[in-house]
Length: 214
Image 1 (cartoon, rainbow, N blue to C red):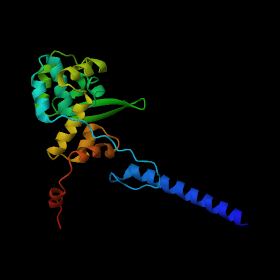
Image 2 (image 1 turned 45 degrees about the horizontal axis):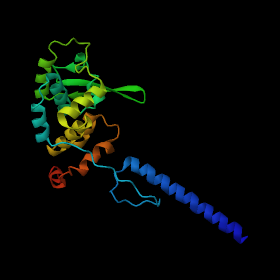
Image 3 (image 1 turned 120 degrees about the horizontal axis):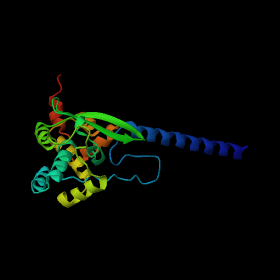
């Protein structure tokens, strides 16, 4: 009788442990937890590596030195929009709405195309009007392969295209841009992906508090 009771108790402990772990895993999907949060699991929690980015001074200086006009425009577009490289090289001229300062971005996720519209900075819009003057509506704005784009950025910026995306996000937050809007600009399905940049640029809580009325 004692042995049965002991076995029954051990089983309950295991069940409760599994339930607790399951709850914690679900919680991580909806709540941003501090770096050193506690879990029941004894396994060491892996810390995410901070995104590698460039300061805007470095970017502007390097872009100014690019002599190839097409390469320069592609780098400008990545810097001014923060889009993924696969999104940038898929854009056709017809996706750019110069009148409303917007561009339609398409990217593939789980074998399905997802679309979003993002605003164009006036400076970028003016640059694109000149750059696309002789491009037909059905043609791509940047007719280059993904590998070709990586080569261009490596040669011109000494980095990879995704660093433009990280740099855009960091610069956005440093200039006081809202996190939720940034998440939409980047096309993140989960805002926790965007929140990773807060580890680099912490929000000024005091300034946010001044916006609240009591």
